[in-house]
Amino acid sequence: MFTSPYADVEIPDVTIYEYLFGRLGGEDLDRIALVDGTSGAEMSYGQLVGRIDATAGWLASHGAGRGTTVGLFCPNVPAFAVVFHGVLRAGAAVTTVNALFTADEVGSQLSDAGASWLFTISPFLERAEAAAQAAGIPAERLVVLDGGEPAAAAGHPSLADVLEAALPAPTLSVDPHAAAVVPYSSGTSGTPKGVLLSQYNLVANVAQSRAFFRVTSDDVLLAVLPFFHAYGLTVLLNLALGERARLVTMPKFDLAEFLRITQDHRCTYLFIAPPIAVALAKHPLVDQFDLSSVRAVLSGAAPLDGELGHAVAKRLGCTMLQGYGMTELSPVSHAIPRDGAERVPLDSVGYTVPNTECKLLDPATDEEIEIPAEGPSAPGQLLVRGPQVMLGYLNRPDATAATIDPDGFLRTGDIATVTADGVVTIVDRLKELIKYKGYQIAPAELEALLLTHPLIADAAVIGIHADDGEEVPKAFVVRQAGAELGDGDVLEFVAGRVAPFKRVRSVEFVDVIPKSASGKILRRELRARA
Ligand code: 4UV
Image (cartoon, rainbow, N blue to C red; front, side, top):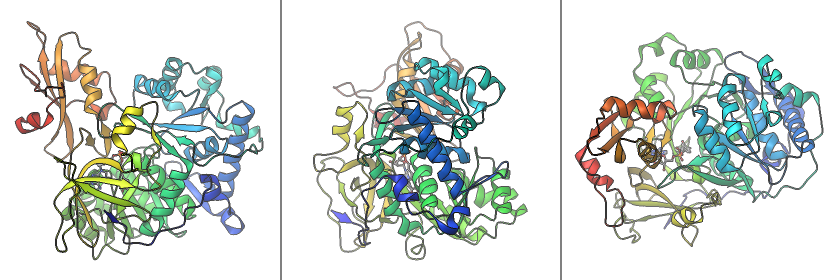
């Protein structure tokens, strides 16, 4: 077993609202919390908290509270923070939905999570309405943040309606240990599942990562990584709000716009995933902008190549950091601390965060791996225990039991090494998961979809590395006897039914999918073949 080299931090037993805003006052009320990077519209901390309270009051007056789950299908805009914290303040739970999802994917998540409300923005209205209908959510419970004519005509309230009602937040005691946030993740196997995170999990993870990332009230953070994903939610949104920093939101990535916002808003801290690091290191456009305000860049969600990271640090003249985590860990468990960039290799994920214990298990035997006095340990599956570990998966006791052992250690499905001084390096992935640009793709979900095709007898999906280094899904397909089916048919079939980032990129027809005696797909064999 190994722990954080850092001393434990205090984790107060309070709600996330109390933790982040309980002591807000004085000059901080007028400080800018959020800026819409596209329009430049600003929201102060005082306005943010006022709007959170009003949203909680309005929801409570409409019967939403403990036991209610609210869907939030929204890209990064300042109002995301209002709704997210307003729902939790009302004692309800929120399920954050990927903004790129198709209407069917949104509908499936809402149904699975048992959501009875949905908040969205007008450009998403068509998908949101179809999803709400599939999940049995009536028009008056589909709130369109920016309103607009078609939304009003269809009977959808807007955020302006909610705020104009100016109802006080309900006085109720919310249990910080109850499930409060339900993002979806496929974990170490199978299809996406609702990850039950408590308000305490969120408070803990902000408290644990503060000392590592050292965001201050002078920082301006570029918020392009989605708030609907645990990385954006904890490390960007909640950590920054707790430190009274300024967040500049970007609803979707576009390199020129990313560089313009960084320059114009004098951003000091960028939070990215590896594909953005590639652009920052190599793209000629970068030289056309003044990025001198940037002091630190944190990359996470997929492996960062050390040399690439150094190239970014050199070009921008900033500190480069790497973080590691998992939705099921709220999500941070490891990171290179801001003051450790000199001593910790950039292709490692740094140290374990405080209040956290880890162990490495031999992938073949599940025996615990010894840590040598010198050099890195043998590789093993990383297990993590701490206050950031999820409560479990929604309605999936088997998956929960397979993921969290009886001692409370969560199996990450990642293979890591560790040195005696506690530096962890992720060297491989044991689990099925494919990561494309930091987004999760669950092979089991694509396999289930492929099997619905009438001409497909069997299918398996694995991740392969494309020419640009990104991991992309490749499908192995067994045709039905005598069926005429080409690559293009398969690609098109999938593309028409999933969010763009999940599309299968290549197809190989085979006679049989290799499987174990118990019927599990032998992905290693397929990987060796690809
Ligand atoms: O569940 P998820 O989509 O979660 C994430 C979380 C990313 C974070 C969290 C905290 C940070 O401080 C930060 O910088 C990034 O992505 O996917 C979890 C899986 O993604 C892979 C690994 O397989 C996880 O189990 N992954 C995430 N970060 C890294 C990574 C990394 N730095 N290096 C290698 N793999």
